[in-house]
Structure formats: C-alpha cells, structure tokens
Image 1 (cartoon, rainbow, N blue to C red):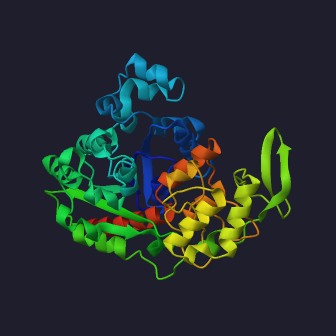
Image 2: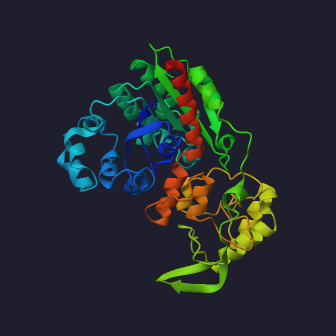
Image 3: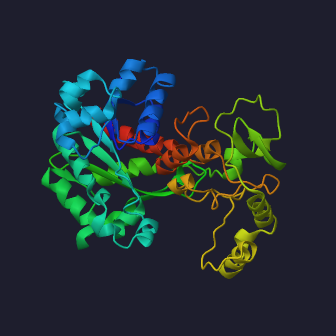
Amino acid sequence: MNSKYTFIDLFAGCGGLSEGFLASNKFEGLAHVEWELPMVKTLRNRLVNKWNHSEDDALKRVIHFDIQKTNELLKGSWCKETTSIFGKTNHKNIVSKGLKGLIKNRKVDFIIGGPPCQAYSVAGRAQDKNSMKDDYRNYLFESFVKVVQEFKPKAFVFENVPGMLSAQPGGVMVTERIYKAFKEIGYEITNPNNLKERIYIADDFEVPQKRKRLILVGVKKESNYDLNEIYKSIDSQKSNTKKNVADAIFNLPKIVPLKSVKKIKGRNVSHIRKEDNTIEITQHNPRHNNSRDVKIFKKWVEEKMNSKSSSEKIDFYNKLLNKESKHAKYRNLEWDKPSPTVVAHLYKDGLMFIHPDSEQARTITVREAALLQAFPADYEFIGSNGYCYKMIGNAVPPLMAKAIALGINNYFKDITS
C-alpha cells in the first residue's frame, strides 16, 4: 500500500483545508496550527470523531498558538507568558520542544494554509481606509514563509481572497512581497502579473456557492516540478455538475415563525421547527428575529426583491425602517442558484442570507451555512453561534480543498512513480 503524503496546516481555522486533504485519503496531517480557541476545539473534535485520533493525539496535533511567534512555535521553549495564556490547551511535549519536536524526524511533504483574509478583502478595505497600513494581518504571510523555510516541503498551497491581488500594504503590492519572500528561500510561485489565472471558483468543484479563492502553489526552484502542470492537474478535478442552494438545504426541516415570541430555556425564540424535532440535525436553529424583521424577510422574498434595481432595494429598506441609508441591507438566497460567498460577517447578522422560503421568514442557520460551504452534515462546530458563523465563513470549502488535494497528489505521484 502506498504511503500517504504528509502536511502541516497553518492558520487552520476550523479545518476546511485539512478536512479536504484528509478526505482525499492521500494525505496525513502532522500538525494543524490555529490561534482562535473555538476553532482549535472544533478541529480537535473532528480529528477524534471522524479521523480516529485519540484525544491525546488530537491535543498534540492541533496546536493553539499565535503563529506570529514563529520561532517560538517551531523550536519550543515557550515563554511563561505564552504558556500562561494557553493553560492546559496544549500538550506538554509541544511546550518543551515546539513544532519541530512534534514532527521529529518525519518528512513534511506539503504545507497548506492561508493567513486571515479580512485584511486583503476589498470589502474590508472599504470599511477601513487605513487597513493596508495598519493591519498586522497584511504581513502574516511572513510566518508562513518561515515555516516553509524550516521544513522545506516539496511544495505548499497558500490560499486567500482574490482581493490580495490589489492589496498594497505600505504602498507595495502584497503579491510582490510574497513572490520575493518565497524566491529568497528557494521557492517559485506564479509571477504576480499572471496570478489572475490562479483564481478558482468553488462551484467548479460541486460546492453550492460562487466563492472565489486565490490558490498559490509554490515549489522548490531547483526541483523539476512544473507549476503549470500542477495547476492543470488541479483543473482536471473540476466538475461539470453544478450544485445550487436547493441541493444543499432544501430537505432540511422547515423552521417557521411563531405567532408570538416564546421564552425557551431563558432565551427568546421567534421560530420553531415545523417538522418533528427528533430529526437528528444539529446546529439547525436560527437567530431570534423580532416581529418587524420576520415581516420584512417574508415580504422581501415574496416580492422577489433580489431582482429589483438598487434604488428599489434601498427604497424598500428605507421605507420599512424609516431610514435614510444609501445601501441595500437585504438579500435572499435563491433555490436554483449557488449561494453568494458565505462570509464571516454572518456572525454579526444574516441580513444578506435570508432563507429562500418566504414561509420561513428568517436568516440561515449555522448548519445551513456549513452545508453551503460543503462541510459534511456531521461536522460539529464548537462555540457560540456567532463564533460558528465566523469560523464557517472563514473556511475553505472542504470539497474544494479535496479537489486541490487530489490534483496535487496525482501530479506528484505521477512524477515520482
């Protein structure tokens, strides 16, 4: 039996990339590094319940750490400040020996991951005019580079939002910075002038979502690996089958508005499942919505407001809420189309993700968001509802990640066989 390739996942989040690589059955995850604790707990839980790791092993492999302290992460000897922050969330062997101590003498074939994308997103820049100068996340790729330099994998996969192509932190194109940084440690990526060719759309891989991601593959310059051929191998995983919102969530139990708000276990509840509550679907409970919002959601869908002009949408919002906004605040999903990009902003509100069934008059649940991201139905997210929306919105769709993994595996197996 052929051995599996190994990988380290940086900025692992709740495990979208890792899930895809593991689901390909071609890769073994040696370590997954993430800073936000709900995401760490979610990924550890997944390794135990799906990928047959012991709790102790999952605790070791999913490292709760601030990757900006890269040297400390790699070599251990963690400072007292670090260990006091983490408490018992990390394994004692990792504290003493770092990531290198965990990997030991095993070869790392690939490094995967992507720094937080908010700093590069066009929407994020629109909200904060100084983000290109002031946001530390613009430079987190440097930590990724250091880990690649340390383990010298065959190749790496670095994913992010297409907005990275126009980001200029400090007045310099971030793609130029990244290209130069990898070149200096002996790795080649696609020339910054040609990076538009490396933008992939999730619905090409049977994800029910029009999500665009920049996929940067890097290889050792002295190797005989061909970047264009690697991308061709990934391209070969594209499917002609297109999935839509109905494919993902149509068969879930309906959740309809109550005639009046009820108090259940100390919480206000505006909606209730129409079908039998014993159906085993977890995390399928919507936000509480007041009666005004319920009426607006219902009216928006019934009047097919998505298809109206921008001015009509703005008028709709302003009249119903007695506002003077210059922006439309609502959008509903449509059964026969893929979802727009599922975003982390869902943790604040779901006004741009109104359920397509007017009878339900609500925004989407955590489970629906996850299914639109092509997470398996048994994937459990640990944390508050808000945090769950956030981690799902920040994730790479596992089906898309699986396609990337298979494409990379096929190329490297062919070239070494």
